[in-house]
Image 1 (tube, one colour):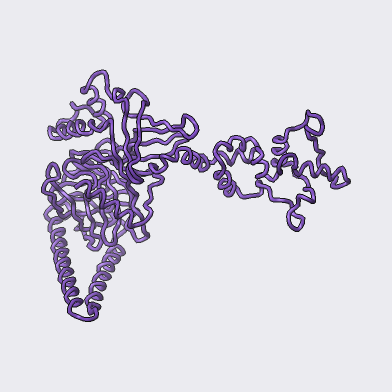
Image 2 (cartoon, helix red, strand yellow):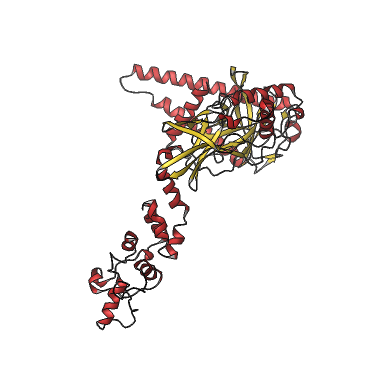
Length: 515
């Protein structure tokens, strides 16, 4: 409390301004000062020093003693005269064990000390060993991946696994369940608990491998088992994962995929490794705000995709995946330099008409890529042959081509109506028939397809359809299939990339691990 008193301007020991003012009054000073009752001087029965400090801070202001006055006779500044934002910073820098005492000084301090920022910082200091695990992570569960969000919640650090809604309800909110939690038992001593299973928290362990990687281990895996054996565990998992029973799923191939996922992921219920992922950085020039989306992927159900922008390209990277296209792979790529003009609504129903338009653009893209390669070769030869670089005209031509493409994109978006009718062509399969019937604009793109086990992967042409700020779709031309994507509307903390380079490096890392 002596520290608090000094911070509040009361002064050390019994040298508070209120006593100084009383002494000044006894000497004939200010007549409006309150009399001082010092419990030690008056023989007890008066207010304690802490109570005097509280009264002084909450409103018992009196004239300071001349010896205590600041420059030019001004009284020393009280903490209560500072803006609340500055008090939050000051209190946040004090030792956590002093904050409860500080809260008893006055109502103002008590109110400010309820600020979440102060206590969140305290938790991070006390649990300093685990401060690096806050943020977004992707678990290493083979092709399936996942999305883990580690947050501070009171005196706990909790790892929440985020799951897509049940197929095919792509617009429903995300589901989440706790995988582990860290809480304080004694000062500077944290306890890790595994939250997996249906028998409550039990003993666990966390090992921080490096700044961007950590692993969890359960020390009591018997808590994960159910009395009914694997059959009961499978049925429970199926209801949680798919919201249905096996009898409700009539498609044999889908049953095989579901059973395969259960067997595979069950191997990781006692030990998991996580790698950090970042949310994509945004720019005012982006088509829409980048971020995380839920998307439909046929019999595989809903999966999580990260949409990011890279100049004239947009990429959709899988955060969760499947045995065909695993997590970490780039599922779709959008060519923002090649917008598509869809036919009228009647002709759009004709799949062959849409296919003709897309294949024409695909051929145009191939020619442009070949021309770009030829220009690059010519430029390299010119630089080697000349004593000084002589590739300026070629470079200018390339830049001019890029400006033309960008200009074409801007012109197309400017000319495009605010919305235009949209309908899927006949024969195109969609898991969710409740897709928007109007769209803003469409672009040429490619989608990644592969056989089971990510065999024979290839990029095939398709159509990126932008519906609004929070929804887009992709028509897989070769598969005659449609995927609908809806934004994940969760405010994730501690997930921003420190730089654009760090985000690009993260994308490369998770893709290389998937490969």
